[in-house]
Image (cartoon, rainbow, N blue to C red; front, top):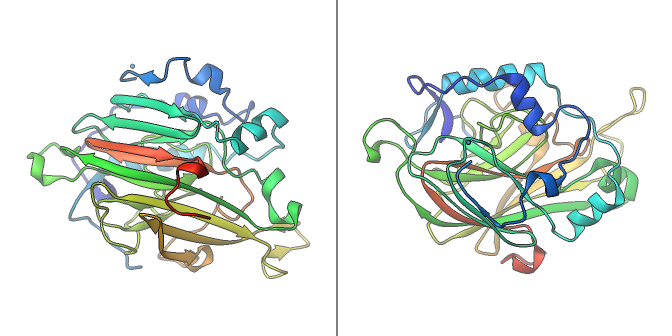
Amino acid sequence: MKNKIQDGLKAPPTDGQEAATNYGSEPPPYHNWQEAVPDTTTFPPPPALGLLSSGNGNASSDDAERAHEFCDKFPLRLPIKPPATVYTSVQEYDLRPVLPKECHGTFTVVSKGRWKGSTKARNGDFLISTSLPLYFPTMDSPFVTKKGKTIYFEVKLLGLREGPGLGPPSSDSSGLSIGFIAHPYPYWRSPGWERGSIGVFSDDGCRFVNDSWGGREFTSAFVVGETVGLGMTFYHPGTSNINLKGKVKKCGVGIFFTRNGHLVGGWDLHEEVDEDAGSVEGLEGDFDLYGAIGLFGGVDFEVSFNRAGWLWKM
């Protein structure tokens, strides 16, 4: 449900400090999944052309304003070197979900790096994030390793029901988005809408990069039964993106998108650097990046972070 602004959908008040605490703006920087996720694997319901409006779904202006206030108040968390056990967990696909209270439905961790979920009809916007980053600058940056780094995962759209709107069921779409985020991130917003995030959306195929105002046309709407994947490749840019005086090192970043195991599109991240598209803050290889799935309305889906389960072969 895009943030192509629509008034009238009132969101419940959320305390900014609580939101920051949930996703962590202070150390420790990484979720302890053993505390964040219970032993049981079944989760009950928890307590490029600019498009100014969507023909499918629209998020509320209240949600957008809350998110902007959140991002102004809580800057992106500076990365630190992860403990060896944390880094190993990610390499072994032991990635657990962080579910916000806005998630109403059921959720199952099927196996390492494989999730399955179902949200209730008319569920409002929210995102599910991995508990650990897929990309650590202190470990994975091409400036550290002297080689490129690719992160990627896939989502299968299994079914759609009523959208989150307050009008007739046919007046608003349900759907999902696949993306990456830097924390802390407002969990009532889909990836791509706020700083430090990208996302591609199922309802109209638009792509968003740190963009609260409409996104860009990119691909066609996802089809029920289809598997889509999103990846980011970080590479050494030579000297073009290195500010030696300020010691700021920004990676070159290529973004790619797959459908049913086939590469079908992509773009250079720095194409987005213009007045209309917004910035690329947080996405140039200098911050931890987490896998994220945005959800709105009633959606059935599967997620695979485990290479063995991907349709696309890297």
